[in-house]
Each structure stands twice: as structure tokens, then as C-alpha cells.
Image 1 (cartoon, rainbow, N blue to C red):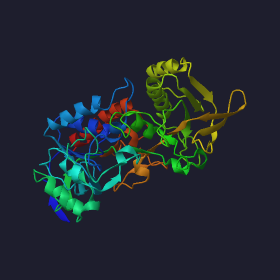
Image 2 (cartoon, helix red, strand yellow; image 1 turned 60 degrees about the vertical axis):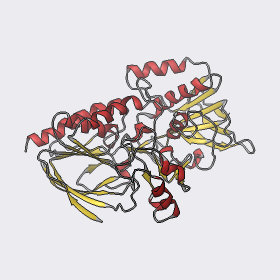
Image 3 (cartoon, rainbow, N blue to C red; image 1 turned 45 degrees about the horizontal axis):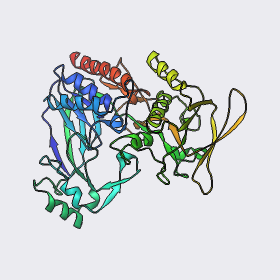
Image 4 (cartoon, rainbow, N blue to C red; image 1 turned 135 degrees about the horizontal axis):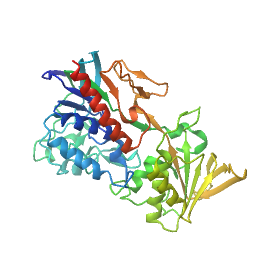
Length: 425
């Protein structure tokens, strides 16, 4: 492992996490004139937004917002981007933090033109994490079509194998470099913004809802990938077990949320995510029947409420107020049976559908990955901002469950807080 020393930059800011909150924080600070180090553990920027098919409020594809932000980064020398990088240690106090960064090798250097020759000759396949393991990808791969940086990545699994030789020989630009090693980077910053984002709650922990047991039970984020044009099925929403076009789908709300055995809080975005995904199905299958089982629908704000009312008017969408008690599979058909009690009539409902989508909750990444800094946290892993102390701040879903619009607004505010720390030095 090699160690490099970055040139200390007076009045610089570290942003940890390259999702929509981290991008916004970094750009707002950099465009005000401050040097920003943007650190992302994945080989690409964009976070969860990059995995969506569409996002609110305009039902835009992620390319709509991310492409503009990537262009702003390219045009701004104040932003220094580190991918495949994680913060190993933070020491110091507001205005003067020493940071240690660990950078993992990509095995592809900046000569890469994305020609794809390495992927063409690579025979090894690995689970496609970008698609939540729905499919597999080559061990030499571009994470997704609009990945930034626009460079391939090669899995360490093939280092020293015949596949590695094939990748090296196929590259005309000397971009494949298996001599790359992990390295550490040390630098000094005045303030830090943690934009470490969120991850879907592990649905296999919810025993009664069948995820992991029945192939036709999927999560809401898996639905985003099925519906996305760059997803595993090129935008076709098909039943996983047999690729059948679904004629009926159930959405199970609060899958693990508002539950003292799992996530005790409301994840804020799940209701709107399911209503949005109902439009995906409606667009592709106008006659499909959609059943949405909910505790109560939370549509925060006038625009979301208007969207909810429009969904309720659809004659093929059935809103059922009742928490799902059980999800099972019908023997021989792969069909899914959803059992719930109607909270209004008290009647027990048993509904058979082709597939079910679990609206799994939003869990802060920090709950499962300890951050190497002196931070205040809730029991659920969300960071608590200490504005009196200053210096380090949390933004977006690292601070609380949020949608994209709220993340952008909050990130702009945290960029200002980070700058205020520097001004006070």
C-alpha cells in the first residue's frame, strides 16, 4: 500500500458521499469559490438517484438532473473527485481536520475510452450490484450507461487469471492496469459534510412477507431497476419467475417501516414511490389490476397530494387500508397471495396477484457502516447536526429520510454551514 500527501488547501471542504446530496453540497460550495474534496465509495457518482427509473416531482429520468451536475463538476477545477474511496480516519476540530482516505484500485486508468473491448473478452461474470443482484455483469464492466467518471471497472476477482490477460491484450489504449494498488491519501480540511445516504432495509429480515422465499416478491428499488430502460429487462416489467407480463400486482406498504421489530420510523418516501411505480405499470399494462395495501398514505405537500388524488381516480387501482399480515406463494403457479385485514370494514382480505412489491424502508448507510469520526447519532443511525459545535454536518438521508427535492434543499443549506465554519477560522 502506498501513501501520498495531498497539498494542504486553506479553507477546503470534504464532502463524503457522491449521491444527489453530496453532489449538490460539493457544487454549491465549489461554485462559491471553495476547494472541495468529493469522496464516493462506489466507482461512480450519482448514488441511489442513478438507480431510479424516474423521480419526483416531475417524473424525470435520473439523467435529467445528474447529467447537469456531472457537467458542472467537469467544468469546475475546485472539485476534486475520488471514487472507490472511503474515509478511514478524521482527527482535529472545526476549521482544522486531518483526514485519511483509502482508495481502492479500479484497475483501469484514465486512458479508458469506454470502448468496451475488455468487457467483450472477459468471461467471468459477477453479481450486478447496480441492479440489486437481479442479473449478472462481466467482471470488466461499466457500472451503468451514464456512469461518472466514464470509465470501466475491473473486479479484483480476475486479477492474476487468464481473464485478466485477455482484458490487458484487448485494450488498445493501455488503460487496463493490474499493477494498481490500494493507497492512502492524507489532507487537511476546514469542514466536513457527511452525505453518506441510505440503503434499502434488508427485506429478508421480514419473515412474513416472503422476500427471498418467493421469486415473484420483489422490493421497490428492484421495481425501479425493472422499469428503467437501462435495467436488466430494458424497461420491461416482467414477472421474475417466468418473464410473464403481470396482469395484477400488489404493493405492500410499510414493509419493515413503522415496526418496532424493524424500522420504528416512517421512511417518508415509500408511499409516493409506490404511487409512482403504479404509473410505471399503468403505462406498460393499461388493463393490469393494481392493489395498494397501506396503513395510511403520506403524501407530503400539495403537489404530492394532487398526484395521490389522480392515482385514486384510476378504476384499476384499488387502495386497501390494511396492514399486510402474510404473503405466500400458490403452489405450481408462482402466483402470490396477500392476506390483510381491511381496517375500515374489519373484513379479512385474501388477494391473489401475479407478483408483489414490498415498499421497503429507507435505512441510513451509517447504521451498518461505522463512520470514523466523532459524530452524534440516533439509535437508528441518522446523524444529528450539532450546529453549536459546527465543523461537521450531515445532509440528505444521512440526517433523515428525504426525497430528492428535500435532499437538494438541505444540501444547499449544509454547504452554507460548511462555509460558515471556514469563515469563522
